[in-house]
Image 1 (cartoon, helix red, strand yellow):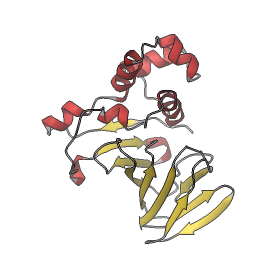
Image 2 (spheres, one colour):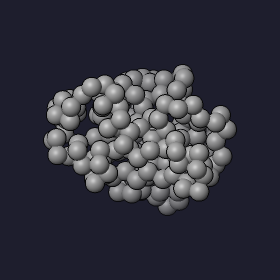
Image 3 (cartoon, helix red, strand yellow):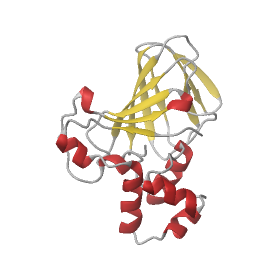
Length: 199
């Protein structure tokens, strides 16, 4: 999967800004916490030392595939790079969600749940017309349930195609390759519950 990442945080909320660090800072913090050098982590995630260094310094936006590999190496969800491990408020106002934008694929993820700790996480996915969650289906070690809130979505799961309309849901078992597509002319919104958190 390709596409650059843009982290969006509300700068006017001081407590939120303090909790939400850039992806690069979060990756560096976790790497150092585990006592890994740039070269050691780069080798694990199939990146050059230069590319990983640029990501950590915020000089380069990671692709979603790179971000998944890094998160996988740490065995932690991608959103944890942004929300950190500090305890957060249990209520998340709609305009205060942590966001991941992937402009090249015209989609945006928002973390609906307060954090990525515990047994599950809840994400909101907005797919622009023609948008998809990846060029090819991907797998992860979690179960997932997705509910279409608006628009029409095509779910590809393990080689099968499912057309989903508003109110329809789909459960995806762990390790099954899947992706979501919006083949319509209108944006679509999907609520996704993932257990355990991996995104």
